Length: 118
Length: 334
Image (cartoon, rainbow over all chains, first blue to last red; front, side, top):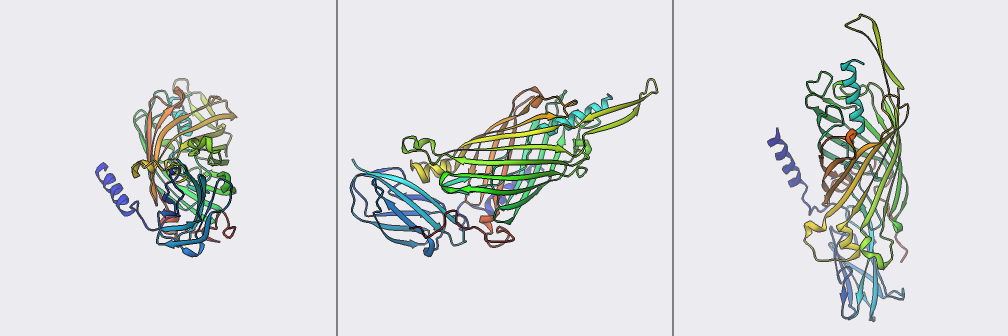
């Protein structure tokens, strides 16, 4: 009884690996890294998600400490990766807001900040 | 009161007072992912399957009885905001549990929950739902305490993430709380049993009153996935970044028709963690009774839970009517 239960449990875990390609697209990591400080203002922000994205409905916006948009407005999507170029900026806190539509039609959104400065 | 009836009443009361081992929905609200909690319901409305949920604990009976539950639950969205779930629970009571004192096995009454999400605010990570849980009387085994009458529990659920706190409190942003308040209304006020006293031969009557019970509880959670994706990426191992440590509390307070039960609050406080993958989660918690009437030892509950909306978003994981997942925040604002 116990042996068959654990065998079934392991089988279920194997059937649903953590890296499944079908799920809500959630932010896996970013460059610059979420909440971290970089010495100079980056030329672009790149986000990696937990699954592939639909380019038509996936966007990134970046604002500086004054609340002004500093992204160029053209989000590039490739697979599970999304990036946007930035105009030159100074030190301070930058806020990144993202919205994505994954290939399985789920939508999700989120935001984070990073710092530029010494 | 006869020993037979006393045992039946006590085991029924004890089973009513122990945490339900059903499973509950997950929910995404803005930045916030609310996992499916193990012992209380949360405000989520979704397509999912919890199987198995296993728990083991010693009841608050006198003498105490070891109870092991094995359960599952399937939840299906009818529309994007309305879902129906159904779940059986199989119980094993060790001696001296059950009507004969020799232990017992059997299903608890089948439960069906209807839940509707009434409000969702992604910016403030707040969500609220209302629901009605129906325990179908007579569908379970009396030997494990299943009542022969229906019980109806209208309930309010809420969830709130702290992601809208200012930057100075950014380390608290991964915290979220969820809660529920329900009012269990038995379909029968009392049960009277007529018997014959073996010594005198006189007719005896025993009446058990079925109380109305306030079912309340909550959880406080610290989301490592939230910390990594919305506050600060500390470069921790992936296993750690998928953990949500939490403490749940599930409590029951009889509030009316309490002649048999008394009005003492019982329940458990349940620390543990949930580990979240893309299409499933695994959770395990301790069940710590808050008083003698709630149990005599620390128990344990564990659960494997599948997100059907992520596993099969175009099939079983989508609502029967309407859009599968409209944007939490409409596109086109930029």
